[in-house]
Image (cartoon, rainbow, N blue to C red; front, side):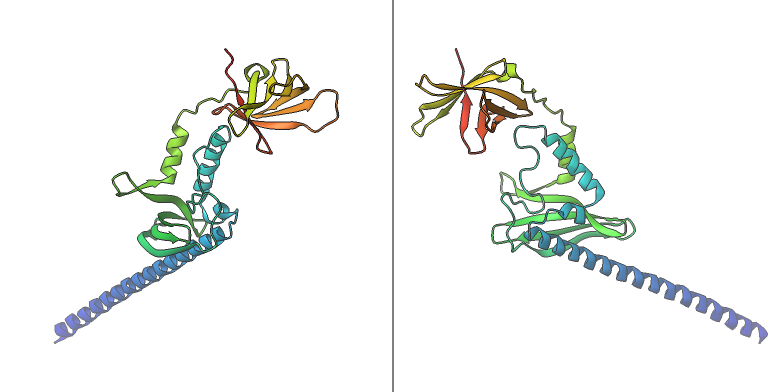
Amino acid sequence: MRKSILIISTLMMLSACGGKKAQTKSTEIAVADSSAVKAKEEIVALINELYAAAARNAEDIDQRFACHEWRNMVARVEEVDSKLAEIGFFNDDYWTMMQDGNPDDLKALDIQFEQLDMEKGTASVSFILNSSVQTVHQKFAFCREDGDWRVHDIIRFNDDPDGKEASFSFMESMQSYLDEPQEEVPELTFANMAGIYDSFNEEGGNESRICLLEDGTATWSMIGSLHFTEYTYTISGNTICLKVKGVESEDECYDYDPNTRMLTNEQGAAYYRQEVE
């Protein structure tokens, strides 16, 4: 009889222990589920807030919504691009794929979570960015940084030549771009800028001419005219500024494009370098 009571007591204790373990496990699962739900709500809210800011053409989107690594990578790319005469890596707003400002009706639709790891603090979310201008399929990779969710990477989708959807990662593409050997742009000097630069009328005829000389002086004249104006000029980066000799006047500045070999002023007047035989 005593043995039976002892066995029953032992079984009851084991049952109680097992029940507590099961209850603890259930609680842990419930907490994890609750945390995941909260994380998804935070990420969706972040995406909506980001594109509300983009619709206002806000200038602080990277600072507010992107992680440190993304911002550092963009800064490195922009530093390389600042030394180029032509368009560099960025050709549009990477958040919206727009080139001439964002429309005010931007909205993220069909937001889908493809991955969420609470322990690692990572997530992957695809969505459709819709507006009156265009519809774009994008994906964000998120990381949890300083207690907040932040965009770590933008994955853009485009149709390849066969009409199939292809994707590329901005982070990977920026890194590849930075790893490429950069072509050195020659510094502009009096010696390499010396030459004849002509503007043209609507019929394609030579209209006016700037002559830059190696000694830092220049002349401007109308084609076919014996009258001309004498200048001195300075070079700062890709900008050439002409100043009339012996007269108090403002400088006339031109930006030089080494690809087209063209001088252009603020009013849009263009002068093309001529080959002299």
